[in-house]
Image (cartoon, rainbow, N blue to C red; front, side, top):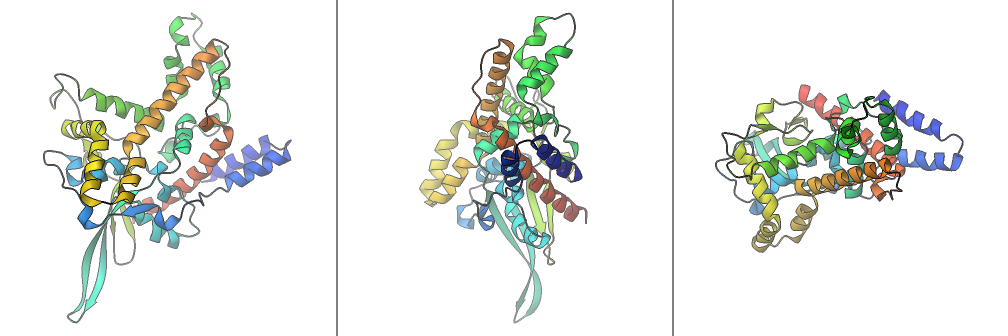
Length: 354
């Protein structure tokens, strides 16, 4: 956490000659996503809305397709896990809403005595503003906060970073070193969410190819931080199961899982219309349409293509008109949300370790 606090001070020091902008940045660093009611950062499903699970799958066999396409969203993009909470007590109350499936042990007192009882909450998580998600991609954020080494680099524009790369490229000056895709691979870390989501998208496309099956498609371990289940005990301690604290075999996708996901991707609108027809829950339908892994993939692909375009413009000395999500102000918003995210994940990890 000290690194993030130091980064805040470093940003302010860069702007000390402009008090007005410094005040604006300081307000943004205190940004807490107050436009959303933290008590409604997710939507709790009624049991009657649960669709059947699918046989023949591996990890995804435990979930219905509504859970799946929502659960796979990185925790960094969820309202519940990027909100600023004033205390661990509030976290304890709200963070269970970030769990796709939250199994809670409660003590129930009846005329026959006091006994432990289980209740299961199924939550559909809501994502932060899609423009901020694109900013997280553009500014090279990772969900692996313990390995985040790009904090200072984010303060340098892509133009500055490309110029620095060109100054240090190999002396033979081969054309491949000015290929936008090669430069992109040098500037963006392998653990960045942008690269991870793009690779995931490519994997989903690959499984649909001719002659592809379980014999030539290997297991895929989801690399970003996401929570797929939680337990709660009688002391209100939430124990999360996620891609950091769990054995990777618990959330490895087999060929059947990826093939299933790819087909959902191609038929998502029809599936959602079917759910609405049978359940008539317009709120659920609207949340799922805006908060699913395919929306995240589309956002990543759009950012990737824009980055390649921006690099090509830099190489040819053309003027590139930036997208709104590339604005430096958005970076400050992301830094603050990231700070909230780290605090919440550290809290959850401590709970899991206990």
